[in-house]
Length: 451
Image (cartoon, rainbow, N blue to C red):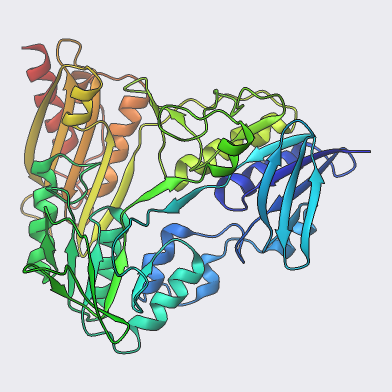
């Protein structure tokens, strides 16, 4: 009898791990069964706002691979199968599906349940016209709504998904307001001075941005949502989307006795092992090691989920691989404004007990005289004394955002700020000044760190 691997969760981490394990072990050696509670496996959640806004026209383009394709690979991918319990002593799970309940045994278990959207206890959440965006079905519903006469939209939440949805609604001509209780948008990834640049740009586009407003009630009329806020300060809307972030889905793990870490996600080592023999975890539900702070973090990024899933799959396939950690590098856009970050913000560096200095420079995406060159602002954060790069943030026009990858590469390789300032980056007037903004920001951060 072959060994059996059971995977709970069929998106990025789960399917990456299953595919990698299958490449290394044949079906007569390792049976792989994946249980996914939704109707889809291996889909692009990051593409959902762009489907809602119409940039991505075909819904099928968001589906990376189908269950049938995995079946052909020798992976038994079962949709509409929800795992309701894990019995570690008996090495089996309980699964609910359209045909009823069944118990399935396992030799190895990969817990890859991902994350779920935060749904706070706000009055009026059950009104018609109130939505979230997490699954492909959510995206399909929103796409149908925005093409059927929505007059005013409010997005509650100022994170990546909130801003991308605001751009999507604006793109299709719907007057849109973003409301957040935080003092700035993108509060977890940008320092306030950089976040203010984003808010200013959104307002210049015609997107209303309201910060410091805690939503405690949604107003309704005739069973449908009519606005956000139920007192003197409220924002009318016939479509409200809650984009308040996500939390790891760990209820099953907690009930089964799989240890959780300080972030509330499943604790794992660098091989994606949970500490319980034969039980692994990867993706949005699991912790990762931050290479700068040295602390465990729980990041809900497709890049992290795919990489952690690959590490788990290699080890489940009989290999020996270690996950090297994360920087939290991320990028998005609103209109023609690109926004990216890596590492720690100034605030996060202070929270981690690091002495940080920051240098912020204003430059352009190409030579200043080049037609179409756009303003960009770069912020580099370094450790006082050592000049070790701790983080970077970029806000600017087309061509600005992906420069964050230079900072991420330097930080990954422990390149100090003053050495990054001398790296041999490419130059031509359509792409950069002779000193790239990355050079300049790194140099200034290095000078402040060592002065």
